[in-house]
Length: 194
Image 1 (cartoon, rainbow, N blue to C red):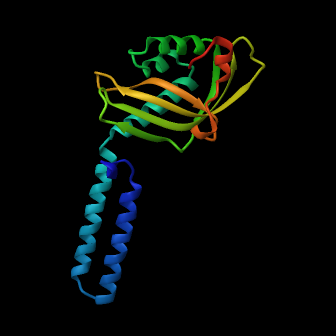
Image 2 (tube, rainbow, N blue to C red):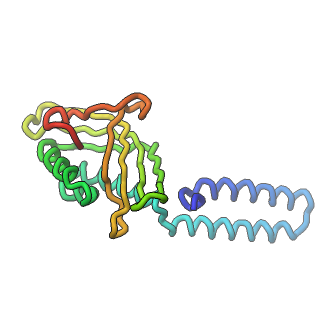
Image 3 (cartoon, rainbow, N blue to C red):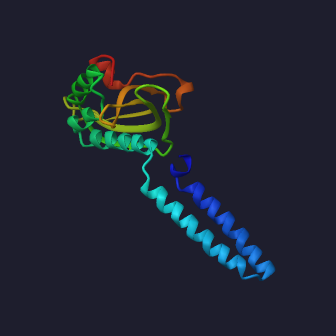
């Protein structure tokens, strides 16, 4: 449910409703509005607690994006390949091959992460779009540092075990999809792919 994706809508509604009830209480001087205000605060607190406890599918996909970033930054090949679906073994192989050639120093996932889910497909498909900036170098060349900024589109599918895993990806110019697809520097060295 959309209300449990983020706490900001709950907070905005709570503040507006609370201000209206408090203002009405001050204007009328009726104690009834004090009880309504206390009830409103309790209901909004309950909604915030539920938002914190309930993990939506979109939040699960976001967690996988951050897991991939952490595994990349740790140069953990197994951690990255665990986030790739078994239904695309060529993508796993390509990721292993490319990660064995580079030493990644930092991975920054920007705050513009957007997730959408197509529940009508079988299995369900999710798409995550975000700007990412990576720094690192080829293992064969410690001196040459490189930076790679991209708008990354990851396509996920929900595997039979219920986990969301990557089935495809696209790198775009950091300005977004409308700016055009780009080829990551490592792909130029080892061929096309992740």
